[in-house]
Image (cartoon, rainbow, N blue to C red):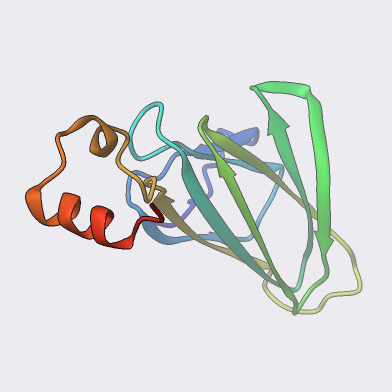
Length: 148
């Protein structure tokens, strides 16, 4: 996915990828990108990891708190030519706000590439497993290994 420049719209660009993994290329970054990563299944815990690479521009990365822009928390700053990874586990959507910091120090075309991956976390233990009747083999093993 590429964030395209639109001469009419110079505000915040909202990006909500549907794929479980991929990348977003943001050539000639301006204003900000708001990257919304939703759980794969509503109400289930998921982990998302984002790696951001920048060239000829620096960026400030914030995490939004429940859609409240005033409640943003600065996570980190990435300098030109560097990359940074951020992973988080949540039941609710995770929204990152990425803002470029222009400087006359850089002499090349500015570009930001955001790699993302979402993974649904499933509990190792099925809660219904405890509710089913034991099989004969399980009963035999429990009887033979118990301290009586």
